[in-house]
Image (cartoon, rainbow, N blue to C red):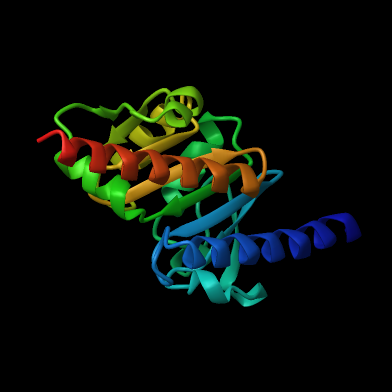
Length: 193
């Protein structure tokens, strides 16, 4: 089908563009994090160990949303989390980044969410849930999908952020907003001590 092939080409190029922005803006180190987009009953997701600032067509793999396949062995270890999010939310794009301030605040938090202190964070995010579960586990998949059914972004305890959108740019904006709000909150909390 030409339309599907064209969509896949456009999507891996969009994944590449967003991956480079994530690295360039310090939201993730090159080989950490992953990106996916939903196309029908499949998703395109970055391969395990891919350098997000050097994504090519071969850095992205197409896997089914239902069940698993042999390609899961080379897909991101977080493919299980992406699948759960797509199944339980209206997301069409997902970014998982290892944002430093978000990770730091998840370690310091004394509750199960981060409430931004900056006006933009309060307006756009309201609060950001902190989710627990081992990397690439069914527990993490279930907990993250549940959190993202009501929020555009979540912080995985000690691990990073997941952000969703209808397009990758929207998920990118959510990722940047979470990290921006966490950076401000971290500095504010340190200044208040």
